[in-house]
Amino acid sequence: AKASPPTANRQLLTMGSAVPTPAKPPVRVLISGAAGQIGYSLIPMLLSGRALGEDQPIDLVLLDIPPCKDKLEGVCMEVQDCGFGLLRSLTPTVDGKTAFEGCDLCILVGGFPRRPGMLRADLLKKNGGIFSAMGKAIGSSASPNVKVVVVANPANTNCLIAALNAEGVPKQNFSCLTRLDMNRSKGLIVSRFGLSSANDVKNVMIWGNHSKTQYPDITEAQIKRDGEWTSVPTVATDEDMKYFKGDFIKTVQQRGAAVLKARGFSSAASAANAVIDHIKSLYQGTAPGEHVAMGVWSNGNPYGIADGIFYSFPCTCKDGKWSIVPGVTCSDESKELMKATEKELLEEKKEALP
Image (cartoon, rainbow, N blue to C red; front, side, top):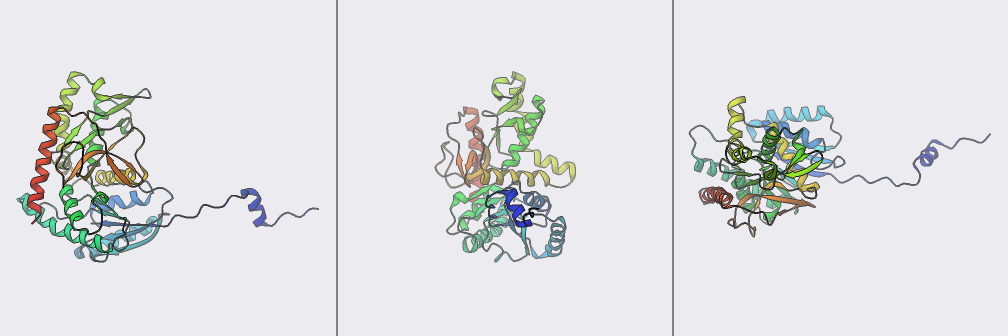
């Protein structure tokens, strides 16, 4: 009788002559403020593969301040206990000078929180010192192509300070989080029109600052009904449009404060989820016909917004780079709201920078 082929040969016969795909090199990702609530929510979402890809290994660096060292160790225990398949290495540290070495992606969640009675100027100056130091560390030791996403508030101006201090890193490699505002807007639109899910809403725009002056704009927004995408302004009733120009804007602007009042803590899970969405768009690209909200470097923008600030625009992404969507029609009312949030950002810049 003919002998059966050895095990190795049987595997080859089964698999054919296909060559296994080599594993991707790990991406070195740093999360600052990693022991905080947003960081705690963000870590498992990141290591699930949703942001960078389900086949993308990660070397994870978790940075926090020295008083949080024990909490950080506890977080690391939990990360280890989860057994994430994409995690290649885990480095906890409280040394902000060396933490950024070789990092490809820095997610800056940690910052100084605003306390009762604290003036905005004081908050800006306090965070100015933190983010200038992180910017310098990024410029001196991170990967030459590092991408930086700023989450800590005031996010736009913290992003500006870090970018200005990161010598040799293009400003275009920095961005700040306004995706949370976009996601909040989508949720309200789902409710307003009785849609199945947030997947049935796209192209909501957030203009300006991640603050109470931001302008959530449904001019380009679309909803999906019966498998077809339709412009929100074309299906909205007069009552709907009154809502979108009034309570809708106010609700999005004040949603963070409402969450804080209701649960006693700032937004954490929703903020972490928005960070993942932001990174996924940046690294994996936006779908054709879709744009997302990102706070980006304003130089050369097509909407008459001042250069030299990080301002939220509608953006498309491809191959790790963003582009501001041109050609959005802005009414006089929209322009007024866009300029109001620009004014706040210019004031913050003046207060934050010496």
